[in-house]
Length: 130
Image 1: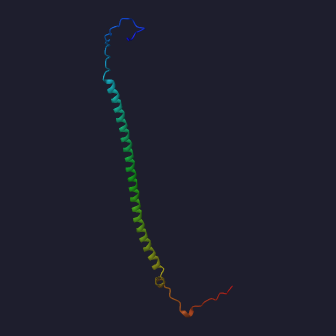
Image 2: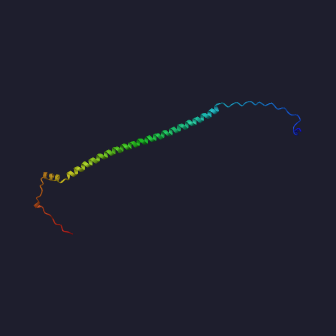
Image 3: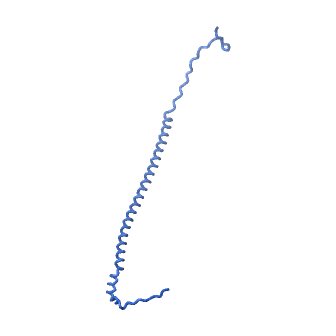
């Protein structure tokens, strides 16, 4: 049994020739290149920013190290000065102890004309007890 086309005409139309559309002109190559160029500029700018940030951080670390070095030099100088002052204090303490010795005081009194009192002329006072 044959298929019947109820809605179509009895004659079968021949296939139509394909319609040739004009090819669209390609966009100039500058548009994609511009986008890529813009991306590379953004990357370069971002790289420059990161380099500047790292340079600033390194400069800060160097400045901090220089400050610590100066402080350490001052501490070293103060330690040396402290040792010198301790030696000077020891020398002065020795001078004070030798100046306060009984023999030196007796010699100074003798030079001024003082003589020791005889033991028989020495008397003691009795203080009352309270």
